[in-house]
Length: 475
Image: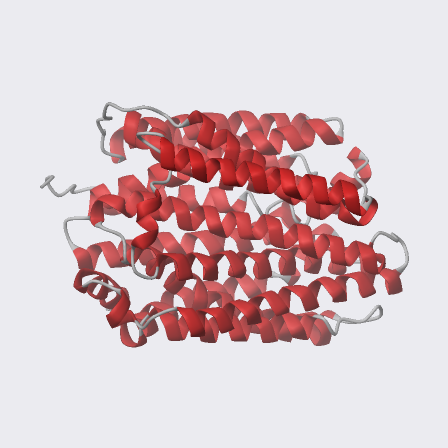
């Protein structure tokens, strides 16, 4: 048993801040997208690659990041991840055309894929001695992710309005340098272990995800034959990944972990949660700016109530409800409420108003997200053995990011097919955005139904120490 680190709570601030920043990187560009589209020449359909280039690299390489953390030590990989993230931020800020921008975003995603699993490993090292402390630390760390995602929208609006869009990337440079300076004093040094890296597996899963997203996005503009060929190619790559995992001695994702109780269902819930939530805020950003005519700062400010609602419910309400009722009821209810909120956004009008068309429905959606996210995360991890917690965390983060990317790709295809590519026509834009909101709401509703049918109750699906961990969240 490792000695208790007296500075563990200060270290948690660094780890939670890192999680906040990594996830914020998926959303801070949201309000800046129209300016980037104008300056870099993105089409309406291709604009989503500014988001998905990051998410695909991040989600596709999370398992590799976790493996590297085991082999070389979590603190070293955490540090390396920040160096890569800073480099990607500089590339993205200096981009003069669309492809360089997409490349910079992909490099940022690689950095995030190193930071996130190393952070979880360090958190388990710091708080694994006490289940009650671990639960509280997990609540704060878990809340940093959706809070970062929503806060990024507001901060992106402020930066874009008063500086310019490259500054949404430049801001990561001083923050990254400050984090690197704090690492030696606050984060424990970790020893690596002997082993190999499943490079082929990492390439296969990342390429498969990228091709699947590209296939969905490009489908409206391509022939059915080309789409089918690309779809089969994506399936072959993902199937190859599974074959590799069965055949190599030290795979990125040992398939036996899927025998853990509740792991598959909880990951399915996380994937569908991401597939509903991320398209919702993406198209809500575009609706505010391209239809209602909001500038960058007013658009970011318009989504600030969602940020506040998420923080209040996730830290003050969800943690207590989780300890009392368990994960399944909260995931189901949260996804139902999210579906209702997104369905409300599908009623937006070309001549709508923030107070009537956006605010009520967005707050409902935020409550749903707040209720579902941490219970799904904890449920995905609770069935795994303690030595598998890092792997389980990497898998659930991967499924959320992959679900986000695929969900956005599908909703982009729907929106484009319904007229969202017609810039300057508020009626056509609104029609396209309505279709995306309807699709996202349907995904959330599907997640609720599948969770209700497939997930077992907390006591039958979790070990006693998992129950203790959930109860500690409500303490």
